[in-house]
Length: 449
Image 1 (cartoon, helix red, strand yellow):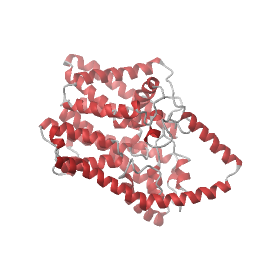
Image 2 (tube, helix red, strand yellow):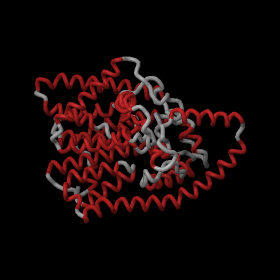
Image 3 (cartoon, one colour):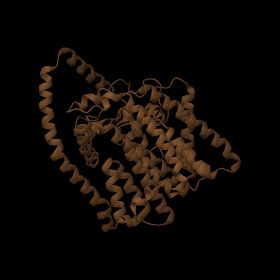
């Protein structure tokens, strides 16, 4: 990692993987943009909130990045994504200039390019993890990458204008770098940890915990040296906080004042139909929202009352891997019930197969540092989403941040199996990957066209 950019060089062995990933996610993004082509690409002075939010609906993912790049309106929480606005701002400036010349909104294309780039490198970093750290054969590494991207909520993030695809790329990169360091018995230098933490937690604050866990696994006791802690942990977090506060005062405070004026003006114009529609929507949200532990502070992000067993079966493992056909791709804050069940027993059988493979693979890999690190990452997600209940009502949209542990666990099974038993497992994995690709892609495309 002496030359940080070298990690993005695509090797000869990886070219076809990159090309196939490129073609697949260009196609999926084309379907997404083409679903409302005229509206999404129309250049105008304002009204981007209405243009995008009234048309975009994909499983609860947000379209805030489209709105920000289109008109510099900030609707995401910058304290949880402190670097995201900094990342989007140059695209806004370029798009603003282009719209003035062409009267075309290029925001959807710019974000699509970022998402496709993120998907390609997520696939490459996972492939390298399988090949170089788990030491799997070429065909097994490709099979496991294909299996990973067949999961419902790994397939969706690289085509929706949210931060999850970027987070997945940064996390898989961190996984690969940490795995190689542990494999070679090398440590992460303080500046390397600083760069990783700055970008991972800058896109989503929760990613920072996983980056710090990685540094702890790689460096061991040396992680707690004052100099390393200051440069590798404290400095990037302080820098991110400073960036967020500057953005808040410079952009969010003035914007909030402008929004308040607009809302007051619109409130006077609303007729009875709009008032009734708003009240009905608020009632729906109240019924299907999280059972929040409090109305303010950190506790408002937590839910201790929603039953965990159906949430784990139907959403955490279920929807994350195999999309439900009822209310497919619906938004729980718009029209999707908070809990949906599969109609056929064999859907649960497929989910059970993945859970069993996951548990068995974890057991086989339990003595390996990479698996131990991944289990700590997984424990963090379980604590955040299942124990504390953060986003428990739509927990599946968090899947791309943890679910790559499943193919890694399966990789340890492949390593341990005698050659005589490999073919049945390969056939099973190929069948599962093909089935999930067909099932999930069909539901996604049908939702958009």
